[in-house]
Length: 347
View 1: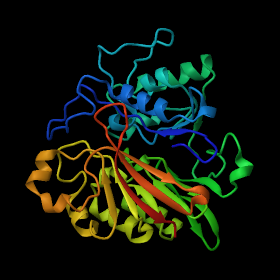
View 2 (view 1 turned 135 degrees about the vertical axis):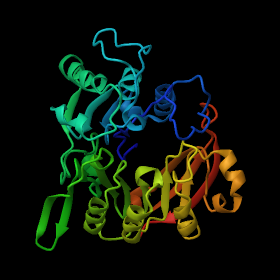
View 3 (view 1 turned 180 degrees about the horizontal axis):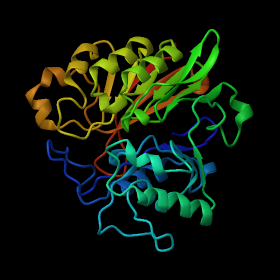
View 4 (view 1 turned 60 degrees about the vertical axis):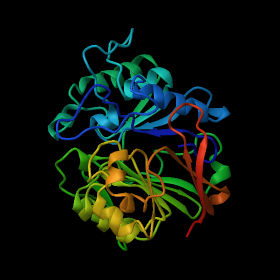
């Protein structure tokens, strides 16, 4: 994210470079199979960093502890020469483009994080990284605070953009409930790692963007959707658009004009073909990497998507009144524009 005054933020930095799932395959990596994912992220970030951000990121938000969000380390991965933590995903990206502040769902106590299932193989590489960098490299870390509107703020010219805000809606299975009697943080009784994801709503004038990691707990999705309570402009689909029941609850309220989905498995449910079929004619769907063989098998279905590959960039106009979507070439580091969509008008 490049925010209106040039404040920068990265959400998640997954990596499972040599890990192969047993039940399904991975789509061919971009730009090639030899380049580690964190290097791809670093090149992209450096290409688009605004001048006032120089060579670092203001905020890094880790939504939850799955390898496609935080990274997965192997025994042959290098270690930081001073801190000794393994370099994979988040920790490797920090070595390329440092973050000033990290927000996650657990800081400073990571002991409960290993009990929610499906965490990365060796979680300690992340907690060791946090401990060392906070103590020796000046990095700050905070627990993602549900209900806060002051944790992610503009770092450079906040008074110039008073209509901008980021409101934290969920983390650790708790969600912000906004009612006529006031706001409250409620326990949605989630017990799986996906549903522990950090979620927030970014607002800039009338433009609103929702991102919620892999939050797929129906009770939690129902609560956050009701709390937002109105249509928004764009969102990152939760859990790679793979859960029709929870997706429909969210989409029925938020009704975003644009939905972006990170897609990288050869799976009919990520993104879910049932969802594509039901909303592809009425909402604009942007997928980052659909397997060509899946498209060839069901060309009519996937023709409903605006994109089936590429870097997807949402660029918001002054004051948030309108926005554009760009599809960038992901086969090299030139980031050429392949297609432009819009303008979309904020509601």
